[in-house]
Image (cartoon, rainbow, N blue to C red; front, top):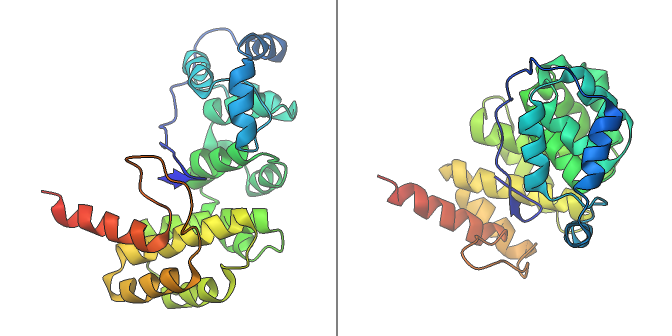
Length: 242
């Protein structure tokens, strides 16, 4: 999956720990020791305000394993690196619908928002209810989470979705949508075109006419997020697969 122009690998929930729980202060001290000015500079370019290398953060999470209560306490610090770590060591199904809603609205940075949706909300029994609620939210950042969950359904469980209606909304609103919402709508457009052959021509046409992300800088060996290129490349791979 691609989020904000970078691949995101969804992780399985790590096993619960049997060791003595560390305190929040101890974990925060470890995070502080991992602070790297170069990592902070790179993260800042993506709108994230922390200086911890994500590989180091994942290694710490692997060592801590699943610790739901520690995760809640880390989230409450409102520190970005601590929130990211909390999302890696929490138990997604332990959160109520209202807790997840509040967490999303308090997710101030793109990476926290992305990991919350992809690593936690998608694994929750409240995902569909939140998808519907967030999709229509007036806050474009919250709405982008609703679109992300809708894209997941387009790919995995499209039954009951009005796919043509989604294309209507995308066609009417995507070009002028705020960046984060625009990205989420574009992902949904591409997913419809990739997964649903009967709507592919229309999805390609919408992408060509709106030209959203047409000039997005794409690293070598990565697929452009421009929907027509994205759709055609993924369909080609499907056809070439053994």
